[in-house]
Amino acid sequence: MKSSAPYRAGQRLPLNAGTPAGEDDQRLVLRLSVNPRARRISIRIDAKSGEVVAVAPSERRLPDAVAFARSKADWIAERLEARVEGLPLEPGATITLHGRETRLEATGTTGAARLSVDAEGAVIRSGGDGEAFGRRVENLLKREARQALTARTDHHLRTLGQKPVRVSIVDTRSRWGSCSPHNRSIRYSWRVVLAPPAVLDYLAAHEVAHLVHADHSPAYWSVVHRLVGDHRPFRAWLRANGQALHAVGR
Image 1 (spheres, rainbow, N blue to C red):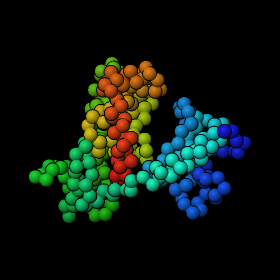
Image 2: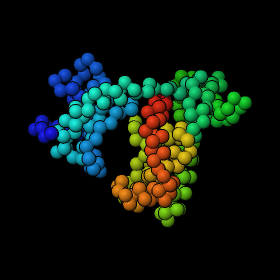
Image 3: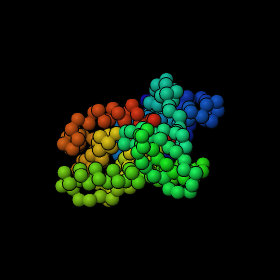
Image 4: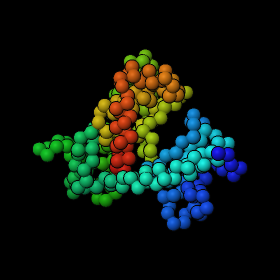
């Protein structure tokens, strides 16, 4: 599947060859990406933009990535049709927090968002109107994420006898986390706090294990198993529910 076409990282082109990018259907735009850590060519759907992203380990392999993505056009179309629409953080919405349904309610004030439990279950009440309400709720969710992920990260670090790391909570479009062993930092998507605690714990173990093995080799998965046991149910949960979580706050 070789091609002499001059492709480059960040380039956008039509998923279907022969159709100018931008015409007819923006969902059919293919974006090219290079990830030197990637071991193989892959494709994914950007949860925010809806673009198809073809990932290659080097620019030299981008023609192969384009050909692979175009060979999967029917599968990509099915995935795009199944995408979950955004769920804004606004009064009256219901989200999950630590895997529990949580209502969002406006207080009619300018106060910060606060989490509580009443007779109907968990509820986040916040001041602010429009985008200000959403920002206050998102800030609360990020604080919850930092607290929970820092605690589980520290736990797994102690289990492996690892030194502390810098934990960052970020707003990613599709990834749940990333680990940089060379500068001992781990980044997590705040949206994982919406998942059940066991799934959040798995994600922390997944990233901490990369401090031992910066790959996904059998030795790496052995470390993950030591930390959380069978990881397959947690990965399956993220595959089944990930799009819905990434839609929250969009």
